[in-house]
Amino acid sequence: MKILLIGSGGREHALAWAISASPLCDRLFIAPGNPGTAQCGENVVLDIADHGAVASFCKLQGIGLVVVGPEGPLVAGLADDLAAAGLKVFGPSKAAAQLEGSKAFTQELCAQFGIPTAGFGRFTDADSAKAYVAAKGAPIVIKADGLAAGKGVVMAETLEEANEAIDMMFGGGLGAAGAEVVIEEWMIGEEASFFALCDGTNALPLASAQDHKRVGDGDTGPNTGGMGAYSPAPVMTPEIERRTMEEIILPSIRAMKARGTPFRGVLFAGLMITVEGPKLIEYNVRFGDPECEVLMPRLAEDVLDLLVASAEGRLAGRTAAWKPEAALTVVFAAENYPGKPVTGTEIRGIEAAEAKPDVLVFHAGTKRDPEGRLLANGGRVLAVTALGRTVREAQAKAYDALAAIDWPGGFHRSDIGRRAVEREEGRG
Image (cartoon, rainbow, N blue to C red; front, side, top):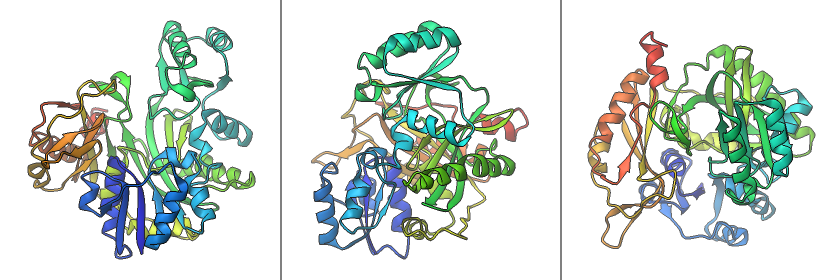
């Protein structure tokens, strides 16, 4: 089977690495890909926004499955247009992708179908949003309704911070994503990520992870797209996973089917584990990044077989096996991220890092110059991943590998996996 993978980040490198190992994969194309994905398949130049051009490429090459990595093309309806052209796609329709594309859509769905989540209000002007905040008090959470590359959430600890966030969003700071704002109660608990494959009717639980959103050690500074992750998340006990499936994932799948917009693809639930149990923070309709970089190395299954089964509606009765090891990834980011990153700096030593046992280096924002040098070309540039018998062991291996990479223009957090390590050592 020939596969086209859409995307260019660390998530796509992890997917390309896993897909290329499948005996079902005869040839893998990645559009546009990056220097890391080029080691797994063939990078191709395609205008992803031109759905007709993507469909034409697929027909010309005899593509058997299109795997859409990022959320943007899904919300833009790429899966619909490819399906209309007779192509098989892993990823939800435009209507189903609203689970990520609109925070308000998901909150209304939760309210209608009794799915546990935060109390909320939705607003299209700053004055009414500020009045709601004044009535509710702080701390409170301010969210842009639309896609904002992981940066559309402000955890406002004071009314002043909340009002500043409202002004920023309605003032165009996040573009069209902030045209509508959702304001939610501040839930108390521990965050975790949980993933399930869906085929429109059935949902297959995958695994858990825990992301580190804040840019600085100790969870300080602004939110980012993610500075590191580990899997599994100890807070996601078997009982919490069972409740997540029964109280959140399966009701959502049934709700989407009842609406006539069945969800097919991977459903990524951002959760808050509270004293009452799991509550939904938000849905994403694709694999997380950097969570994918710890999920793929742990998966003890043919990932392509699972993706095809999801696309073809054949998940009933399926299970997914996982390696017993923990995985941890640390994001190496460019100077000034999550602001405008400093790009063009040279990176050396990746081969030395990858030569270490149980280590994988996934490319995210990199490029090759005409001389073949590897350069930073984005905010989150590399994801250095390691497997270990414990999170502590995986953490030690990942940071040891990071030390082998020569990149003065990069920085990373030094405490990825802190909570899990504290639990392992009886301190959490």
